[in-house]
Amino acid sequence: MSDEPKFLRLTVELTVEVLDVDALQAAALAEIRHPDADLTEEERTEQAELVVSDESGASALQWLIEPDHVLQLVDHITEIEPREAMLGVEPSEGPSDEEEEEHDHV
Image (cartoon, rainbow, N blue to C red; front, side):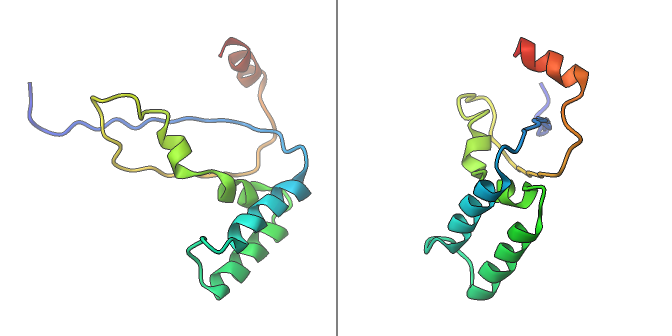
């Protein structure tokens, strides 16, 4: 077997329905304002403005997703080591018929 490192990119796509954008934004603002958040006052203000101005809720949701939660997808696999993780949240038109069928089988 080759000693060269081998990398695999895991792609996960999840569509969620925002049931209460105001509550989602409030939860994100609480995280931003939390004393343990590693932000300067200027960064807190900037992030809060981003969350409040984004009517889709995407900015709020991105604040609420913990990177460790995403890494739990592979935590139990001892034969690999996570090297890089990126997360993006963006507005969607909703689930396609194909996505609804996949959800039914998961």
